Image (cartoon, rainbow, N blue to C red; front, side, top):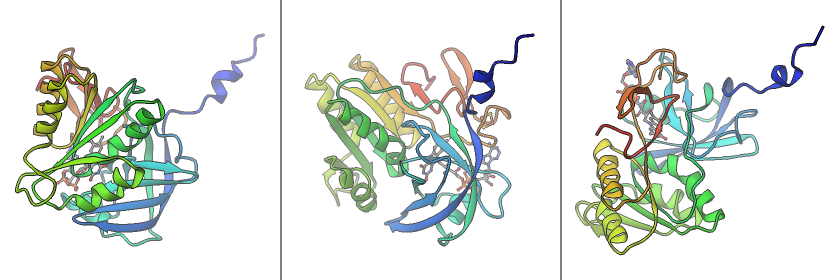
Length: 263
Ligand SMILES: Cc1cc2nc3c(=O)[nH]c(=O)nc-3n(C[C@H](O)[C@H](O)[C@H](O)COP(=O)(O)OP(=O)(O)OC[C@H]3O[C@@H](n4cnc5c(N)ncnc54)[C@H](O)[C@@H]3O)c2cc1C
Ligand code: FES
């Protein structure tokens, strides 16, 4: 009798449930950088993938992009938004959490020059992509927007700490250029730059960046921020409408092509 395929039996599961320990929690203006010990999980995230992190006292986990990872650790940038993320940014080092990961499709390997358009903790989903693009020899143009100067520390601890120059746009003109980051993107595209466009942030920002990519005939990608519960494709709470019908953002996304999303 033929023995069962050992190759299949040895195949690593795509995601699993891991115990993490919070190592550091550093305020960056209104945001926070969390560094966690994550043996077995760190090092397995492709750019744009995420984990579904437990929150003490809450039933549902919260999806968070992995911004960086190394030997046994990973780094997140978290913005306090509702009860779950407020709890996460208030945790002290030593706390143990659980996380499902790595989840989601992530970004395809970047080829050539890239333009990144972000706001708030959207930087988290784009950092490893920026590193990959640079390692592949591509130029990386970063446009980051905020109402005022509140994201300056976040940008410094993320993009700038890794050597990426950032065009910072504030609506009130208190930091960088006055205006919206999509104005910088439009200038770049109008100058004929052959970039692929990636945007992560509020819905309106991603829609505007996606429309510009489409208008200028450039590849465009977004990472949709939708409510998730299971994170693994079972509950359908993350359904998004695409040109191919409804898809689940947790397994079919969170990265979608700009043209694919019904904005
Ligand atoms: C792929 C992805 C990556 C992300 N990465 C980051 C990141 O790097 N940094 C960051 O700051 N934020 C990130 N976010 C956003 C972050 O997940 C949300 O801000 C967070 O989940 C909000 O939870 P909350 O409890 O703070 O607030 P709320 O949104 O107010 O949550 C409110 C309530 O909604 C409930 N709820 C949540 N999901 C569901 C559901 N599916 N059905 C029913 N009820 C539900 C919760 O239990 C909670 O009680 C990401 C989101 C996604 C999808
Ligand atoms: S979060 Fe459950 S199917 Fe996507």
